[in-house]
Length: 298
Image 1: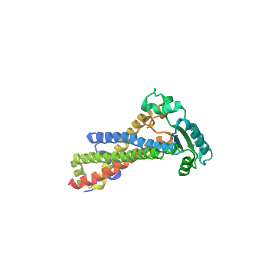
Image 2 (image 1 turned 90 degrees about the vertical axis):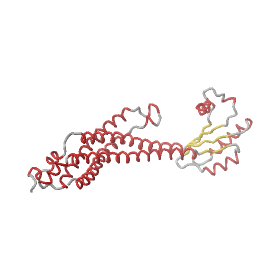
Image 3 (image 1 turned 180 degrees about the vertical axis):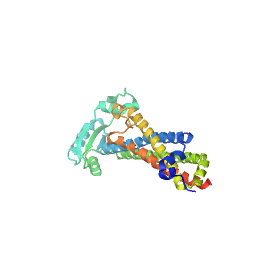
Image 4 (image 1 turned 30 degrees about the vertical axis):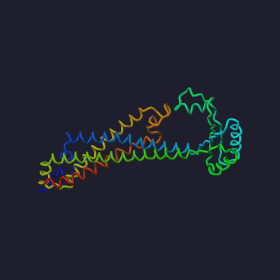
């Protein structure tokens, strides 16, 4: 038997009749796509925020260093002067500054509280050093300090910078892995929904086969409907996710990492790629489910 003219003239009306426009599978697909897209916005924001954090930490710590001077009280001023003299003739030093007692107190406040008697304690002297873009020859400076001021220890913050940058890079990788898992879960849920829809319409599929419809046409009907559902649900989830990100406090208000989790500048365009990716995932998942179920339904 030949297929009806209404099915041969246009795939779109046929698809609208083959796949039920409402029902459990429709709601499940829309809800799944919206929820996963909403989570994908936050995973993407985490990845971008940690990337900015890693770059900021690497840039700020890479250009800063400190020199700690531990010496008897009667030799402290002389060694500080010797260190400052060495720094003036060291290539790569942009500026240097001896930290005062108030600054030392602020540094120690998180560990010892605000009432620490800094003046009464034999604390070392700290000199903050800012490097130029070319950087400092660390080994050469350490040798000069050892000769001129034996109590001076140069710290270029390498041991602090590397773990922080590594942690930020791992958080960024975690965000990207979360995106992969989110889209994988979306594919699984849409596959189950498509299989349920195909199984529920077994009689419709059998009738279409009797009138001459091929499995490729039936599969395209389901693929088109579920792809559009995935695209619409993901678009809704992205809008809700972006609204939630916009409601977060900006980084300037608190200066912390969590408050700077949102997007900035051109980063607001990145979530717009989530709906097309979700549609591609829905397309692939539905094609797989349709091909598998149509082989079973005979």
